[in-house]
Length: 506
Image (cartoon, rainbow, N blue to C red; front, side):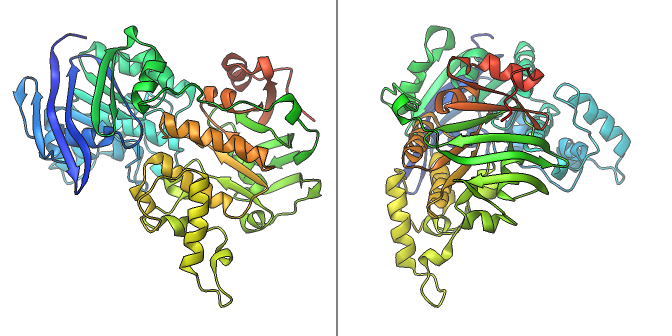
């Protein structure tokens, strides 16, 4: 890293009607540095990145690139300057190959009438070899979310990149994939490429970045060398207040119970998992850990009958569950919150109130089966207040909300049926630190009211902080269980990677 700036932004502002998204922002990116940008959802991070990438035009302010004033009028202009933006939301074409997606920009500008697929796949394989074993000829729709994220990053690396913007790039990656990405980032920075790294994960910022800039409510707050501050300083600057407890207090001894909410015995699915047996007790939050692809989501989806041909015995509060479909699961009060919030968790363009009522419309319908908007809004208002949902109007589309509030709408939809058991898959993915603390508090309050909670998460600090016990899944089986003092990142990763003799079988 040098002290020479490649990108300097001065007094930049951007409004959307009466909403001030950016207020006289200052920002500097130096050559060869990895510069973290932190802030809660709604702080202005995405708006600023969209201005830098030419997607949005500022109302006022100045942008210097390599010391010269520029007007970045479009993403194509940004690309000519050498600015590459890897968005958090995956924007690949699902029905063409990985190689075609990676070289789409070059293909579009080519004058050739015929495409040399073999050459394209060879070049793609060369780039992908640094990121993971992804077949260049595979159709994108056959890939997992984590693999698609790596293809997005590979696509950016093919361009003549001088500034690389990464927006929550590890949200869908395994720990191993994330470490591979961090190694690539350091190599790119050593070559003089400057990286803007947006993340809510303090560990990633402090392990991999040189400086961090904090934004709050559309305003620039501070820039500091990572070596000179603590993670708590960044968190407090982000939220404008001191957050002493990111995780609520765990189950007290007096709250422990032998009452079992969920019993799972010998659950099997021919292609996904086998011999899964565990209990969920009243008053506890049970975590499920494991590398992506280990079968974590497949197990809970199998219980809910969302996918797979599952065999085995499942009991809810001592009564056998004989489910044929997810509709049956909902009727029994067992619901699943998807890891893909925008794909499966909420209907982005529908009103907030309509989203919350979607699982059980008969609750807000009259005797003729017609939706009663007043009942729908009353239900949404009650659940919104319970979850501290922040929105303008319940008639607004969910897309108008921050990521944290979108997730609260998804949780409210689960709560609308008065569930007995909720499976939450990556419940705080892409959510800022303040909203994370709120969601963790909500989960703890729910278990204290008797609701069963099972959390799947790739964030080990979250599992350790919020759960009372953690099951570790490896290659479709339970590799072990940790609790109390044994619930450490090292123990969980060891079980996830290698298994262990202490595998939890009941």
